[in-house]
Image (cartoon, rainbow, N blue to C red; front, side, top):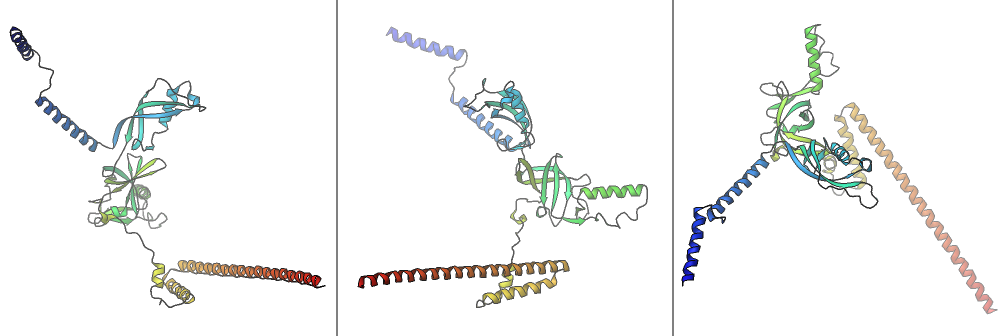
Length: 364
């Protein structure tokens, strides 16, 4: 009995020391719940940060490189040159265009040379500044070229952006053609001095903009304003030869299917053969189509009529030459068949003569 009481007292003392002194290292249920809530909030914050990231990113990347043997004395120089070759190029692993790199470090202390290959294989880590726009992002570019089909922009004076015609609101904007380069009326009545200089400036602006501009139907303001800066939505990325260009839109709802252009369907043959009866022969069908071509050429300009007549003549000559080739081929086939039959007949006659000779010898 005395031993039991002593042990019970010591346990109580230990508990009292723990409660009176520093807190117990054991985690309570409330502390665990609060930590779980904090983790969830951090995860939400991380997701928001990724969604709200801009077009420029700073990425810590790792990479395996094969350094040529010319840089055997200085592997760092070789790695830096390889990173320099990636600048202003679209790298799929980084999902953007590399603008700069810094803080080059070698992950391993040694480099490996495999078999007979003299290249030094090593792993490096570096920090890269990347221009990484994504679909749905809104950017600002400066108008560089205007044409009836599209508007060309430059983002940061470097990256090309194209806004097709069907992504420009047709109820608000229209294309206004500028004067031709060799138009005698343009600048003919300008006087020397300030007026002439203003005309030269206007000509230079028209040349930059491609001989025309997009203007507002009601106000007459130029697309992009006086300075030429225009906000657009990225709707597509075009990657060619490791170069990135964007496709933009200034529509209110740029991803609506109403802005997709309908593809032009060629119905030339269907329109010509639509009214032909099913019992018509092949020659009559060709005559009807040729007649439809001749009738349709009457509405064309003289240059196009000449081109169509030349194309028809060329098609007729090609058809005649192909017909002659087919006839020559048929004649050669018939000649070969005739020679084979003559040869076969001669062989059969020889066999008959031999057989008859043998029979005569036996009877004699």
